[in-house]
Amino acid sequence: MLENFKPEVAIILRSDETIKKFKLKRVSINTSFGPVHRCYIGKIYDIPVLIIYGRFNGEKVPSNQINFQQTIEAVKNVGVNKLIGTFVVGGIHPNMPQGSVYVLGDLVGVGNYNINWNQNESFHNAEMYNPFCSTLTKQLCDASRKMDFPVKENAIYVSFYGYPRIETKAELNFYNKMGWDIVGQTCDPEATCARLNQICYAGVAVQIDDPSGRAEYINKLEDNKKANAYVEDIKHCRERTTKIILQFLKDYKKYDCNVCSKMSRKNKNFREFPDEFYE
Ligand SMILES: [Zn+2]
Image (cartoon, rainbow, N blue to C red; front, side, top):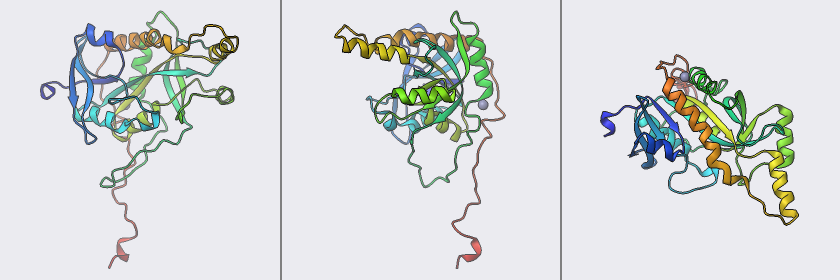
């Protein structure tokens, strides 16, 4: 089936409704890490797409154990060079409530995630001065402006690797002082892995909690009142990012990227020491 189907865009998206509505077909994609079974293909508004149902392959694990390289390899193996990540994230700013939506503009990595590099391949660091593809991001922003809810563009995403936990009050205060918008655990290394593979990458995120909501939850527990943790509202929040993705696909304009496909710091001339010292 995949031989005859070439997706134009891949999207990491957990939306049962979208898969049902557009009658997407589940396929498995082979990678050097083993098969990825959570892949769906089909057309959404005439655009051939690959939907990857989230980032967990098989079972839920802490974020530093997610195999981001495998997901990116699956995208690459079906010949797609454009990828959008959708995210549920934590809020930082006290005035931005749960359900606030963002198109990502930059990211800050405060974790220490690392990947296992295949030593049969030459190594290079990803060029991440602009971590997101500007053309793909612009199309996401255009779609966002058609929504009936506000969307903050050019958002700064802090990537923090759980350990596993979410942020402390002091950490959120610090991020807020730095002017960062949202915090999550998956955008980096996903964006980095995409860049290493010359894939155009962009992101859209929805906030599923906020500092005051988290404080309120704890206060209620302290007062022995019934408290609903924010997790119950994730589905409702995700509907917003899905809506942007569908609008994006409706208006999607095909393009060849002059930047992401060429951005590489590969150094093919690397030697451990100068050739003249070999004997
Ligand atoms: Zn690009």
